[in-house]
Amino acid sequence: MEIIFLGTGTSQGVPMIACDCAVCTSPDPRNRRTRASIHVVMGGLHIQVDAAPEFRQQCLRERITWLDWFILTHAHADHIVGMDDLRRFCDLLGGVALKVHSTETGLGRVQAMFPYAIGDRPASKGYAAFTLAPMPAKIDLPQGSIESVLLPHGAVDTLGLMFTERGSGKKFAYYTDCKTVPAEAVALARGADVVVLDGLREKPHPTHLTIDEAVAVAQQIGAPRTLLTHLTHLNDHAALAAALPAGVEPAYDGLRLQL
Image (tube, rainbow, N blue to C red; front, side, top):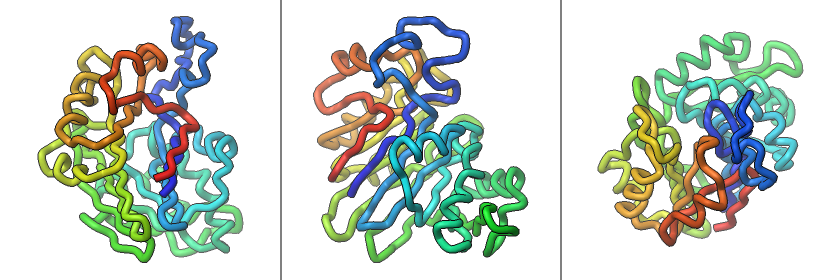
């Protein structure tokens, strides 16, 4: 299994507009964070999770050339706005609609934002086309399985995802944008080789895990490696990496994992 971190930043990105703080002006490329999303290759199946406003640039930067499935964790702007750029992958699929899974709320937002793209085929060559389906508790595929669990994120729920590759048996959990990780989500993530957790900043936030809260969840899950994502400009990569306990580290844009 391969995991590509297309983006690891918050809704404002880093550098942030009109900010000259030490992180926003840092020469360390790991402090340049586009909005959070990942690309998972499981048994040869390409699964995109979320489409940030920079989705097109992320795909060009990381040379993403194919996509089979799309999962929207939730419908906040920093995760959904880039979905129009999925049109290129519909072209590559031969003009076939891309299957989009999300929560009921997420699917409703997709319909509201992209009414021209809902259907079995593109309305015209070069357009996006989506067939929408609620994300079930588990999808079984020849390449492996994708399990989901709901994570509280303010007024909405986010999909937490667990990928299990059939051939290798490797497991990967992705829990972005959440304030807490309920017991059933902790249980689902146990046994994962790598876990990704929301880790916004040190200061408390009403809808996101703080760094300390994320570390506490990581210790509950007990994965050998945990990475933090959705990081604000209050986090310098090197300083945060040095302060975190063993087994926990900040992710960064362009990070690639081979499991």
